[in-house]
Amino acid sequence: MRRMSNIDILPMACVGLILVLAMMVIAPMVMTHTQTPVEVPRAHTAETKTEENLTITFNAGGSLFVNDKEIALEQLTETILYELEKDSFQLVVIRADKDVLHVDVMEILAKVKSCGAKRIACATKKIKGE
Image 1 (cartoon, helix red, strand yellow):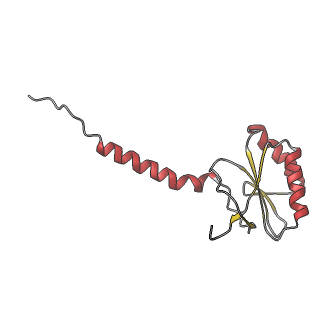
Image 2 (cartoon, rainbow, N blue to C red):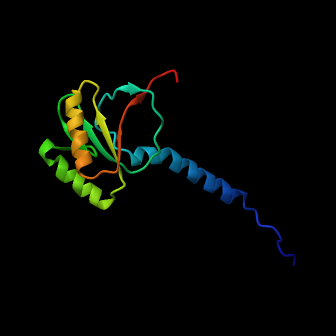
Image 3 (cartoon, rainbow, N blue to C red):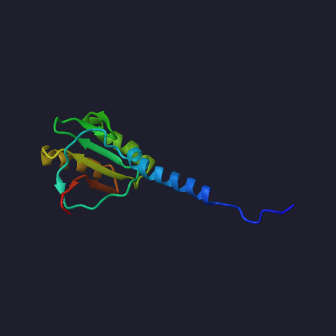
């Protein structure tokens, strides 16, 4: 009887590669809060890394959403404090419609900052052609 001296690992490597590719395609869809439709302004911007963010969306109709769940403006501070208790270095992304008054966005930004958020970003769309 002759012993097998080599093990073929190519099929296992192919399966691993397929799993990695599947995760790369699915992860951005699962990790971001973009279910609430809003037309953010265009700007010269860099792409963000995919991570679990606290996303605050303010649409043109005046509705406020936190992670795609609608809340009242009076509940915003309490909701932010609750979310930041879990992770104080969590990125807070403010998605505001381009037609919303800047003073309203600044009010939301001030509330986020007063809650102790350490990382804050405003969402924009990249200008085409860059």
